[in-house]
Image (cartoon, rainbow, N blue to C red; front, side, top):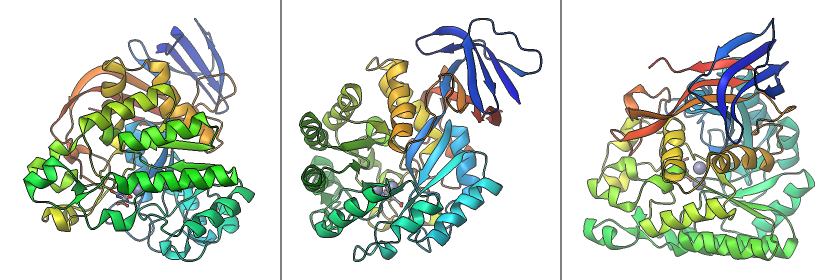
Length: 422
Ligand code: DOR
Ligand code: ZN
Ligand code: ZN
């Protein structure tokens, strides 16, 4: 099977053709001729590697009313993702090979074609007490371990998981929030929490855990990955650690780049997320961190919820933002259109680095890499309308926002899995 993408613009290369054969990129040149290929005219469009999401919640098994592997992978494809890693806070929890295998099998047989890589739980039942079946899950296809949704409060357990995980080539992905410092907060602690009368969470809750993980990683000389960094102080801790050679990697999420706690003033629970939306100074630091390599990746933390869990008072609402279908535009706007980075830099943080972190042969437009590709219109203006999301989760604080940059087509292994019909 051959795919020939004609006249698209490739970052760093200008207008070129791209030929994919048997699922991998075979040629990138001007004016490729090929008799027996499916030809796609990409004139006026940008050709990029499909994005690789290190962190999402597909809710399957157990919470299919929020999302399932079919709806979640369709939403991912529409958002420009060709690989996604899904967290273990399902029901039952993905803490053993049976659940891991179920996710892999369902994604392969009824998903949209997007690669789904499960992340196994770190502890049984996400209880933070005993280590989950890490080796078994690795064999079944898990690519990392994490109790995401919950912090790992027991530092000794964290140490054991880092050591045990390393034996299977699995990095711990940590949701950094000290539960005691969170102290039942529902938003960032500061002027707005005081104004609104909502309970705030100090940024120290996140930074204390990041610092602890860095100390463990440095002491053990083992890798650790920090999930959804949201604060300026967190970026600085990671910057200093990397300068010392600590094996720490980190991600931030599009909503931290595009949103602040000013959005909470609406009292809309769509803005509730853990860690919470922060301040403009944090946004700047996160962008700087992505530009200078302190932060390796952008990950959505796509967290779909049912409207009944969101259309309640702020204190009672579920935390999380449905992120797949807005990620591309929010990142292109805040990073590329805002002139903080080039398109090549964007590819590095959205595709290449995340692929490297999970050890997959994708995330780059190079001969020999998997033909996981998107075609995008970087300038198309559109209005975020969550009612049109393919995700079951309509929970986004960006509903109604005008944005620029739209994914037009998505290919996995040289096969089209999504086309924008809008
Ligand atoms: O806001 C969040 N939602 N943060 C998390 O860590 C978990 C996630 C979820 O599962 O809904
Ligand atoms: Zn998390
Ligand atoms: Zn998460």
